[in-house]
Image 1 (cartoon, rainbow, N blue to C red):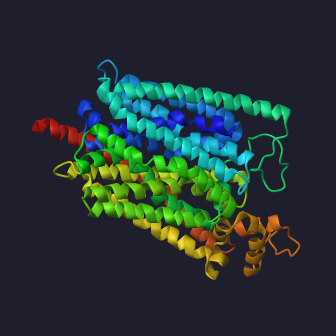
Image 2 (tube, one colour):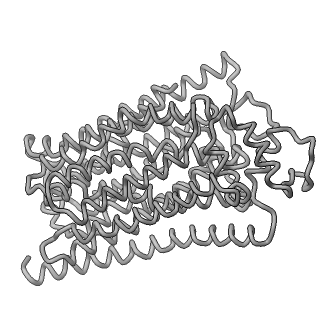
Length: 514
């Protein structure tokens, strides 16, 4: 199950960096500017600002295995359209974008389907972290191979369509893996009693994998710690994931080398996560410290962007990419793990993850579009000014994760953000920590609304992870919900500006003979 689940996204992640790695070639061949290229890259994220929430509901309703098949089929169709858009001299920007949109239907929620499968088969602190680590190890390996070979194939085979066709073939392999997941899941459930670890408290553990329902009232019941995590992901996840859109061209400019060297250098950072993320998953399962790892990830990201922005030497550039590799390694596993560990009811895991992904996708649209415009405004097409945007994101994620880490070790934080503290402790010490936090919060209430000294440890844990009663807490959570929706709305507006900037840039280039 682990092997097939990891491989069903191999094609997805293989293709992730292809377009951005061949940025220089695509811009020259399609005769588009940086704003138009940013639109091409960010359209995938824009589609998923709302689509991933809707698909989160569908995944819960029909199950992770079945949806893995459907989503990988969409990605395969999109990959084939992308490849066709660059074949036989067609070189159509709009067809290429159409392929990206079709592939985006599968790309955005395929990770959610994977996590849903593993959330059912593995418990927090008992295999879930390791399984997520293995997922991202394989994902980074696929992206590394795709990125590092794209420009090599493009130059040696005479066309940049070849890397895209290879990606489509790999996507077919992923579809076959997804079909194997579906068949294997059916077999396991017909021959064994499968324990579902994402069940609601008090619900029978065995049964269908279709656990969870997307429920808007449940959104209001998410603790403030959850919204803190979304704020962190808005900057950290979006910043780390979107930097790949300029990494190859930035390497070309800084090293003054061609596309092949730029592709190799910019993809080299993916090798570290291949080996580190499974070990990180083992560490999280054994020792916890999820918030600490997120803080370290933010610090690595900040150091990387500071080095890239304020130094132009080659050794510093290499050092910066190494720190970026550490940030890439430390982000995914604790992010997925902590979302599951801080929500009061695992029944709504898909709701929580879908909301997080939606806001992150919106943030990526904002940063990629803004960076494309800044590069167009540069007199020599330099990316130096664009890196400033990532530097701001890095500062923000360090501040947010630092505040969350402080809350884990101060009496004020333990009182008002107990879910953060519970995600930080060692899994085997969770029950003891629940009792400590229960005593620290004298007004903690059970689901019945009154404190019950005879509550079970599990009931106490659920109560501690639930929102703190009171109008201030309710107001703060509504503000957080509004802020998340605002980010998505701003992303759509910024994307519209990006389209306008791209069209305007093309007209100006045409009238000046550039």
